[in-house]
Length: 368
Image (spheres, rainbow, N blue to C red):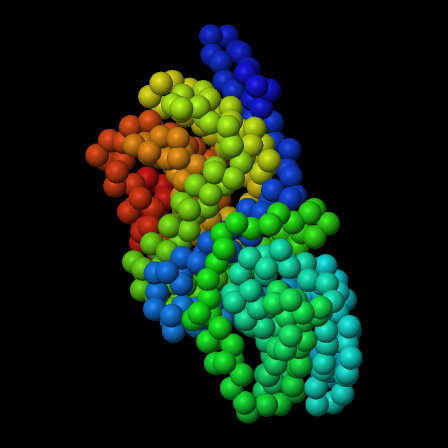
């Protein structure tokens, strides 16, 4: 036992329990990977024009959602908007801004410190227009006839990011920004943010939910659910590769439980009791989940994503295996139940399609 799991004996029963200790840097990395993987999967699975609209719509929805969440005041002037957004949005996100002009017709500002520059440098053709859409969503909550112009960007080597917020504009700048997505690429090796650079967890959660919601809004259910499921599985696989550097030639179930607890579950703050660890399977119950707010807002998305993520982590060690998910805390159960099989049965092989149907609310998770 490597210390990542607590071994507990009671009568003739032995269980193993994780020792969750949330790591902010790890949590931020998970959020960044999720966002970039979602966008990367959209760009690969959908035609470029539709993909760019999905991403831009998500960014604008995010800006509007953050405005509603954090700005409680009624805004009627550009000065009021600048004061409120700077106080309740930019500062909360760790974004440093200098307002160079505030008039009745427009606001000009320079971003001197960006909380997501590590993400931006990995994928500037995605992050820059996404930042534009986010700013546009913030702005048009107060000035619905307005428009946003984005100039220089830090991600492309400039010292600042320049934005102009127009109170009224007929120019279709949005379409020009969308075209950036059509030539976008993602380098899926994200620099890790320090804890001081991390954006609020709620902002990351809103970002993921807005992108996912936009996917389902613009695509048919089958395509949308496949995109979300692929993203979750890629995330699990990528996190496994990133954090489990020393691996045995052939995994045992106990080694997997120990290593993933040390480098993944404990870092996430996930509390798990492994009630059975045998050569054929692992039975576990999650009693502490790091994403209760996300699950509570959208359990039909959060629960299958958690399953896909777990599946990605498991199948890196046991490629012929499968993961079974039972009741979930998001649906009132006291724990989330996972059973990890080393070999897949015919019945279990159909589970992925059932989970995809749950994403589209065509099937209840309690049936699984």
